Length: 464
Image (cartoon, rainbow, N blue to C red; front, side, top):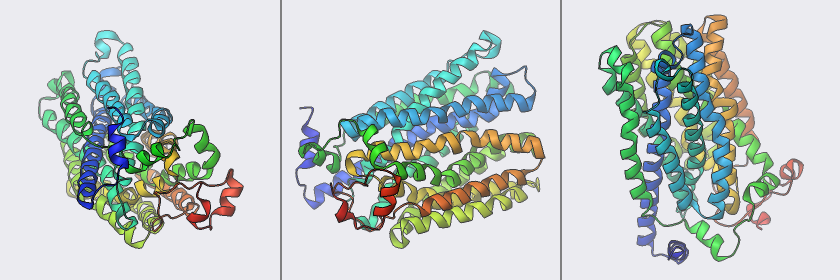
């Protein structure tokens, strides 16, 4: 009975049945990632508004902010741990079962944040508990992304729309960002004292309802045809995490580095901006919240559209175009913010997600396509989540430190440009699989040098 989803998925389906399963997989992946990112972004939004005051009240404002973002960064340190753990099981027992586990882990950790006492109640132990729960959140997110992308992408029959299909789990990011900021905005209308006392906790409590919805949807889907085929042909890897490091070291390294220009700016645009806006520019938190909400609504269109464009002009070309635009935009971004005019601030924040989305839309397919089917969950998860150690996690801390040192947003813009340049260089080192069939197994030869030598070979020449 437990294997029936695999048997059904491995059995040839009619075109109508396949389209139905594809729609269900895309919905399940998108709804699931929306919930996961709601949990994750809720924490990041509240960090800049609340945690420094509640859990580090004896620190100077800037020091308290750095300490709060230090806890925030722990979630990014945990992501590669989740990628390794759930990547292993995703390639061993399947995409569906692993995704159910990641959703539960993330949801329960987020729910528990609502009950963490403040510094006034238990002293530094409150910060310790937050750090632990943030780590658990990071582990869940680390395992979530790879499975969600594969759940959607591996149901796609044709390479002509693979970038578009894989972009829908990416759609969960702006959707989660929108829900998280909407929840905080709704309760931030309370008085400052009420919001600090208990209002900020309610959105964390509500996450348990979203988790229930996500579980219901994910329990009703089938395993992907690619994994079902691996099971049927007895090709499931015994130690996928070890094997992916042997077979695809280049792809892991460069997919992680390619995310520098996307991930680091994103957390500056959506997390650090709350601190910059309220403490440096002196604008209300509601203005920043409303701008981020509007930007996330725009991303509902720009992410899948960018994924679609990558199917037309090529994954690498679209991604590198986005990196170049992001690098230049950072300077315009801070120029508009520094006017301190609410209208320009609003426009800058809204537009900041557009160059990011030009990279994020095609990114799922770009990364996942680099790895053969039996190692894809492990490889894609590692490549994607290792970037958290060098990009997403440190970004708000680096931005805060740069501003403290130079007292200028343009120093942060220079950091964004550097990240974009690194992404451009790394992306040139990856193979573009836009027009290739990825349903068959393919392996890179062992080691960096031999991978480079085989880079120009047709995919058929590297079938296992």
